[in-house]
Image (tube, rainbow, N blue to C red; front, side, top):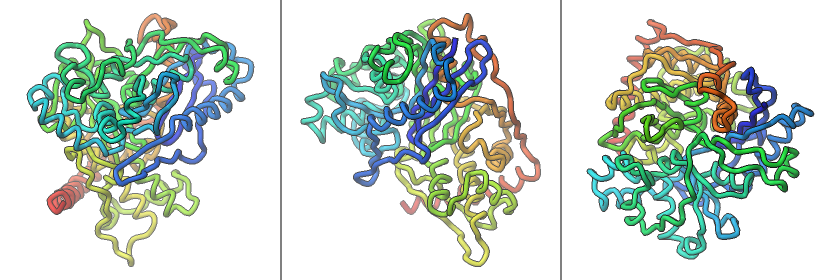
Length: 496
């Protein structure tokens, strides 16, 4: 059987087809060639049109199937990974009522803060394991408060992956994991939080029917199958947010294992068997993809909004046609510390680890007589690594203390410069694997439809492709540089 994996990101949609028996990727494509636009009608807002996701998915799939040829008929299951925390609202005819409010949108921060005060710190931290913050439930409350006419028309709300699944199957469903990422889940009771819904005045009828991440969640309709060139009835058998799915793709399923990614945002994601929270709500806890009533598996996540988007911004506006590998080549010979140039990379909305403050990005120590393009690119990669260390130190307070971090062959981790900086800065081994989000979603589909007899069978073909180990000399240099960067950050936060 062949397995189709879809990874719906905020930058692009990637599609992969994996041979279930060997784990080999037979075909892969992504769309659009340039990154998808994020609309910001007002400061702090971030929106995308769900129809654009669908269009880019169909174009990526067409490219993927073209290279696959007649083997497309062997595709037997579909898995979906998607950008987390977004809000899609539809009416009774399944028509989208407004652009999706996506993960990095900050407009609901104040609404979440008011809910945290109303629900109480003790309830929020022990039942929700977090403050309501800027998650999907708070975004929906924003629509209720600011767009009442649209709110009245809402039949169901969805996460981005739920929307894509709806287009494929004509069924509106979600997962327990998805409900937890939207802050709807009561971890103490193991059900949707009635107190949260009551606080926001949200009817439980607006929430879709939920099921496990690994389960049959509908079949490909005949009309959509004809449009896509696939066989009708292929089951959608796996669905998860991009970070739990990234962990799955790396076989991070057991307590103590840690995965990381650095796409538009950067994430450290550890698996735990204990319900734990950060008293300052700087980390997020979700039901992991393999959580069951009998087996507690929780994902502890720290998100840094401004990581790869900084590198992308530099490429777009200073790169003059350079590719990312060319930018890495220019960064490599620059001295560690970038000759005094430092960047705070937090220019992509409210940062959870700063308690939902939008502190912006800034550049410090720029010397017109010394610094060149290569300094910009190395300083950016150093800044991203510094933010990862800062986040990792927060996570250590909750018991997540890795010596090895697993990552896929994608985004910032493709850069050896970045991997070496991060490894030396955090005293961890960075292990790179031949996987990504769409491949992980394909493997998840195989588990969900019952093709694999065990989780272990699903990871045939997963191989280590690279390792970065701490360099003692670099570690000493970067320990000093990190403390200087941290002082710069502290001063910036104080001034704000």
